[in-house]
Length: 585
Image 1 (cartoon, helix red, strand yellow):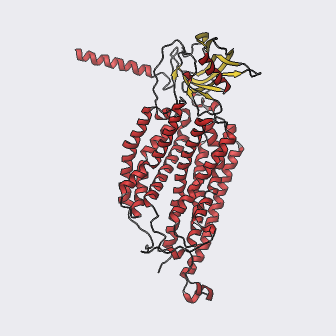
Image 2 (cartoon, rainbow, N blue to C red; image 1 turned 135 degrees about the vertical axis):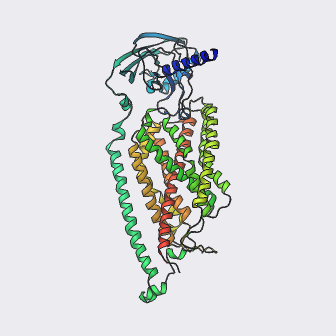
Image 3 (spheres, one colour; image 1 turned 180 degrees about the vertical axis):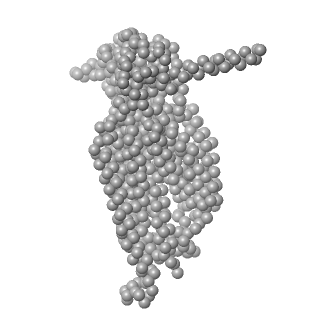
């Protein structure tokens, strides 16, 4: 009986816990008079939303209620610097709170200087109620510039629909002049009102359709689409007509040729490098690792954009980043399969080393850059500092999830697609590359190859940058998917044209050229980020500059991996096609 009573007691406790957990901010359903938690998140300068500090790093005071322990629910939350702390303010569902003082701060010299600095630098703070973000300003400067004031009263106006919160507005009131030794009272009040806003539409007020769905945005998509049609038509017309003439010239009998063609014979053109065109690229281990990672990033980008369209990931804190990390880890076999199979086809033998390079090349870059920025964030006591536990979690994901799955993909790739099946034999001795005009050199082709792809995504980059570095929520993922497809098509078309000209100049080094020509798009994006930093933002200082250019470098590198893979894969199909059609004697 004692054991049975213990089991029943345990069941009762679990049942009570489940009931209590059934109505809270996790499922966004509340009972009347149930506690609603006001979380204080971060504070920081308005002109750089990425430089943030813990709310209570300023000498604010909390309410009288006992604090609630909060742990990061998602990895994305922790990586984004979300530092939720309980405000200590009592708020109950549907219960109005009259204006009431909840604490008082006596300013010593240190606290006075901290508040003055925050006001001078236009500090804003962020709070959350039921996952809805709320922003408020710390204070303002007197019109004469010699007085600094802080807002001391928080008026929360909360809208509800049935038993769900659908709207929150904050009004900052009661300016109090900052003076040493002054005692500043902080007050709050809460008003509830019925709202007609549906729960599924409650984030619409945070979106900016006038910005993201502006005619310029639509025009840029249309312009990029027309560029795709033009390029595809141009590639089809020029290459097919040119190749048809080449096929006729290569396949025509001698008696059917005129005197000039007889003299020239087959001594020029892309046919002459048929014995070297499928020669393995230089540094095959690095090349195959880059291609495998590019495949991986392409799959992750496509999946995350699709999930964002279907699931509206922008409504949950850190959900987009958490989804990206999960998809990247789960799709690691893609990296191993394509990288490992390509390395095997190129005759590579040290496949374990290639697999490690493929699995860790991008995570090592990301972690190395993030940890470097993390030291600066720790020095500045910024909330962007990544907790040690989060760093351990990311390391474990790399070692215990990404590495084994990449190994599985590598083994499958080597066994299923690791045999070379080139349409032409490879000569034992490499053919010398003849001299050619300067604009046909691979270095020139690489520099010029990224201009058109960058032009197709230029406008979208502005919207993406603005959403990340300013107070905008990016939600038009349908536009992003269209731009993603357009970028792939434009990149493939451009690199095919570049490769055809390179081969026609009897230069068979097309693998690296096609990859780098397409990847150079990322170089133009990074150069554009300099323009955006100096002319579109008001960032300054070591932390803001390092944070901006560090993460923009990571974004550009990932984009370079992806575009380079687009270029190589499309060019590879083209090269196989033209050399499998021509009969080689």
